[in-house]
Image 1: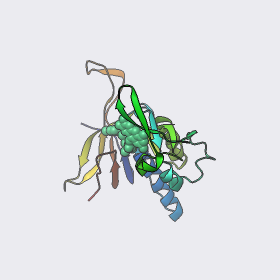
Image 2: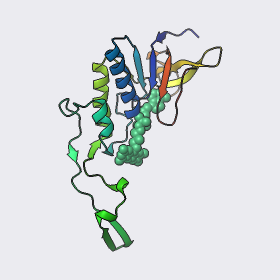
Image 3: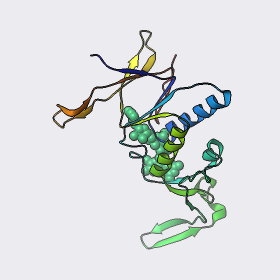
Length: 194
Ligand SMILES: Cc1cc2nc3c(=O)[nH]c(=O)nc-3n(C[C@H](O)[C@H](O)[C@H](O)COP(=O)(O)OP(=O)(O)OC[C@H]3O[C@@H](n4cnc5c(N)ncnc54)[C@H](O)[C@@H]3O)c2cc1C
């Protein structure tokens, strides 16, 4: 089947915190070196953030490194954790507070933020677009394109505009091939070119 193919230097599948941060960092590095780098990020949700778990306690260390001026740029980290209270529930009606000194470090959240991770991703998406990342929401990576040597060369996006019966609607758009030189992919998978 004939399909339109777009080529980029880097293709990132998945606009979660990992994919967006990778896109931003790559563009920052390219800009620092004065190099052109065409980065494409595909997100299957209708918009960036649409498929992201809504609430999270957010530890900002990585964001401090990636975008140190996040506060000035209006990042939606608005509710800082002021205090931790950890309880041991010994029965349906009884609980005892564990002294903070005995609470493991990983359960301490002072200085972290309670966020909507979807909103954080929407904001990261804006930062990525400001760095000229080609962000394509509504495009699932549906199939992997392999080279003759078996290397990953890109992905084919899903068809758009099919009815529930699988028939093409007026809005139908066929799949696109999107190729790249380097891949990083959503959580749990990591594809790299050979
Ligand atoms: C119930 C729960 C609670 C959590 N609470 C916290 C917390 O309080 N604090 C914390 O730090 N972490 C928390 N986490 C973990 C945190 O959500 C993840 O570590 C983080 O979201 C991982 O980011 P990611 O970008 O790797 O993947 P994801 O956030 O999963 O993002 C993947 C993105 O890729 C897109 N995608 C997937 N497949 C395709 C495809 N084929 N084509 C195109 N796009 C695709 C998805 O739509 C999604 O937008 C929690 C997780 C869960 C499940």
